[in-house]
Image 1 (cartoon, rainbow, N blue to C red):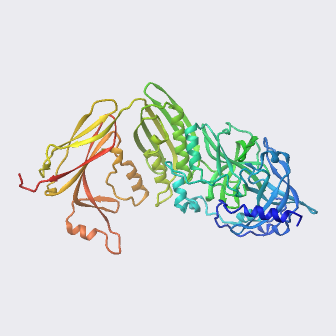
Image 2 (image 1 turned 30 degrees about the vertical axis):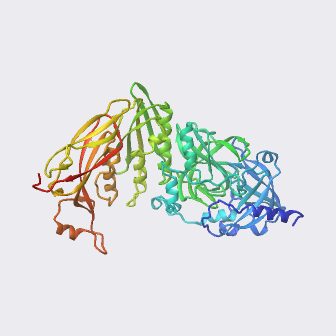
Image 3 (image 1 turned 180 degrees about the horizontal axis):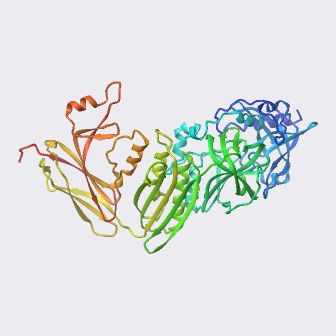
Length: 611
């Protein structure tokens, strides 16, 4: 070992204590020569057992345009079991460009070749680096680990409604539209982490850009307002080659989101890239394209490539620890999203984009498209009444039409849009536990009226402290509008005789805060029916809770059954026959504006015959 190398390796290894890379188990490395027979296009490889400190070679990546260029490298050493059953090769470069920029986000996957007496052989993919590093030192994923992914069988699209990593509830929480992001790794810590994947965003205003950044914070995907969408009929390379740029397209159209990396290995229609995961979602189907690098922007923390997608060439089929696997023989369609934004005396703006099909990614990306379109077309920070009509095209069903009304004192903000039932329904449909659901289209109409057409429920009043059973008194609901005098709505309520002698709760609430009584769905059709059933925010829902029991059974709500029948149908000790619930008498009163808030009172129901 050359003088001074051992202490250097010890220092490098010591810096790995706060490693934040995913620890997902991967197949054990196999000898590169045994993983897959070489073809005319596949490069010769070198196994780890032959790699020694001091060996020299070169990497390939695109610094500008579409043509890969060489940069010199030298092996420092090997970190064994850096990840479960995966070693990492440490290299450094004396290339002047990398001395200036350090390891660049977007270089992930750059093939590293080592030069020997029998020619150049592929060692692996540049994949890891340090934030704030002064020297261009990187970690390389051995090619044997990447080639092993070629032998992993695919379940197929029809059997892959959700990726393996999706079973982690934390991932689902991170990808919901009203997400509070988990803590990201501290970029100042001395950790060897996956080189960041630059996610080039175009067409996104600052608020939506910030939300996407929060959602993606737990992953090594760095949103950059420094990209461009692929132009119509984009030209570009017609095939991938080692060292060329590859993009994974998440959004296309008037807005775009594209993750850029580098191709490591090509053999026929199979393409390996990145050398580390993007989201670590396992089997997945996303479109992949060639890309053009406009320039490399050097930064103190982490430099990155500014790139744009060009020509779609295939489908990403695996997103795993050793890297990405693409297949150029496959095509993946996307979900069209159209957002129209208008309002009184205002021209209507139309935004069109396509988002990827995926249980976790689709709700997040669709929410970003809708919010960005609404905020771009209606940017005023002012009191606003917002009406949102959402139409979801689900294959085999009539379009799901949902209407939301909201008031916001700061315009079309992310907060105002976070509770949209239309966006929430996308997740409910895609995550349904019954059968795969094909979401074919998302159409959203956002109407913004810059006036405070809203009233808050501030009080409830009855004319007496005790109600007569079997009567129909009026509940007076007091509402306070913005910048106006209070007024009341009179709501007749029926007092059942069965409540005689009871103390009951009466509640008045904005319609969107009340969930209708409905049975738990037992299939996708029932779920779709439930989603169609809701109360609008332009209504007051008065609820009188009763002691009577109802029953949900086989997808239906059953009430007013004899007690003996309830005893027979209620859940037993070992079988689930039906679920009981307390019935509620409800009255829905339409209002002229958006209602917010809720109030409740307790009232005594007189005994029969009491005066």
